[in-house]
Image 1 (cartoon, rainbow, N blue to C red):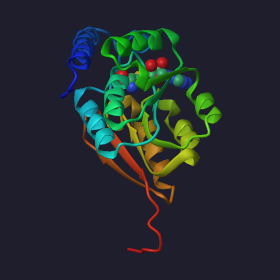
Image 2 (spheres, rainbow, N blue to C red):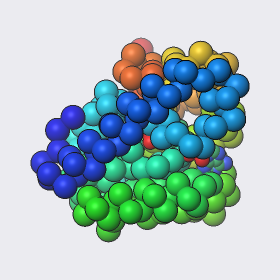
Image 3 (tube, rainbow, N blue to C red):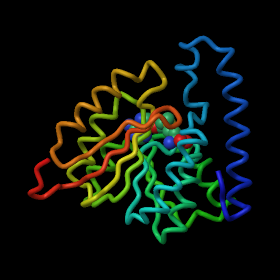
Length: 215
Ligand SMILES: C[S@@+](CC[C@H](N)C(=O)[O-])C[C@H]1O[C@@H](n2cnc3c(N)ncnc32)[C@H](O)[C@@H]1O
């Protein structure tokens, strides 16, 4: 991944190192222990999908960017850097104040704090309290919340909004939630969507009304 600003690149490199260490630790743990300790880990989108998100935001220069699932700020850093390039900002939501406090320090160290608004609370409550519209949504929350979060943001999407959803292929345990989300997306007449084999599987959804064209 390429960042113009060396301060951003240095903070991203720290996330990459921490993620590599955590991946090694998780490889030694039984699955139920990983689940029980999931709040300790970054559980990040990963470098490949981060590069995709960064390019997409820079290319599209959207208005409001909404991230559901800050965690420790790995993806927030990437979105915030692209938001600065695009003259916009990121609203990022997480239930966990300690994770957001960590993420805030990382954004400050990267010089990106003014491009991020942290909202700590339940994603469904935060979305329902915000009138929108949202131009770019990154959905990366616990997978059982994918459909309710998607249904909450859907009426608030701007025309030609983009929704990027992570973990649509991996991990295997999230596949049922991913399939249910894909069905919910495909029931909406004004959404076009594609599953991309990037990182852990990205669903790229665009709000698009095709007018009177019938193909
Ligand atoms: C997979 S992690 C996000 C990873 C992050 N996007 C990244 O790439 O670095 C999912 C996050 O969703 C948060 N979360 C889970 N349930 C939530 C809820 N109801 N409202 C807000 N955040 C929630 C968890 O605390 C966790 O940090």
